[in-house]
Image 1: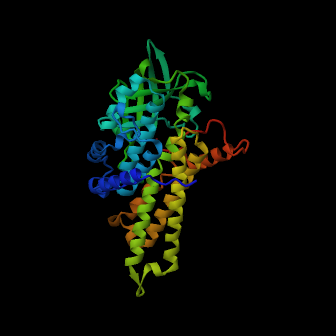
Image 2: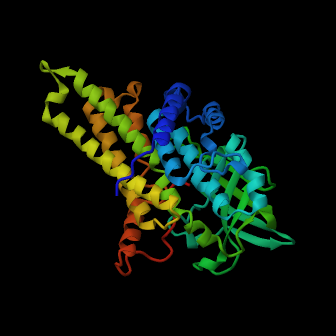
Image 3: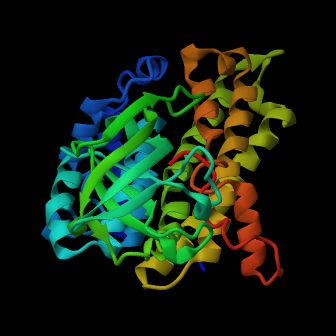
Length: 397
């Protein structure tokens, strides 16, 4: 099935690319070196409407359908040179906003979504723990009943947006049985609650403008009104967001693949060696051809998921394939771009090496690809391909 953008979606794409090129990532290289969250660009995104794309107008958003949201994120990834900023936006959407959209009460939506759309609130997902990454059922953070609410105790790590977040979606254990799906619950936790400690920031290889950190809940009092869904429903609440995260988060990757392809074509046509342009050598032209193949296949996989979600259909198998193929495809494209640019590709000055560093996290976050392949095999009917608890992520969240 081939999904073609409508004239309105193509117009939106042009507008987003023009905005991203002129307004975002003006000092992306410097921000990357300093691992600085680009707050000014975050607010520019909010003013342009980026942070409200998938949110209904009633809560301050634009109400884009899933496929249009996906195409918009692809355009943002193409036009914005700061991959970390785009990654922060995606964590905000698919680690926080999506929980409220799918499972939040009307009061929760009206309380949090307007601020998440206008840029005054940054969202994050407090899921991973020091000893519980892909195995979500082994988490030890607890939420004990305390009067009309709960008290959270535990440590969450590898939280993208964590050091700058105002709102966390936290998964905690509300029962005593380790390994039981009905013992987990999801909560909205705000950074200003007592006992929320942003413990430290974690330096990392790439996507440095998305800060990652450790957050501790030290007896944090959380009102019952902040429970998402019912008590004990945290696991199905979490798994219901998987399709969105494992596909929509990688829409900007497709944009980045196209940007790297165009950069490589320019280099091949202008750089001369041995009296001829680089593109005349098959060792250069063939990898560029492979870039195009990966790009088009990635886009087809991506749009397939967007179409299914727009139609209200399940897309776990398609989202899993998209996550694996697109994340690995961007790594291969970025590696090829570095090699094609030679010494310039290796130097900070030209920004190509940053593209590769940023791409390398893709096969890890939002569910490591080794786990994803097990999930896909299980979906295809391979008995015992994956243990029941390993449906979670396997990296930064």
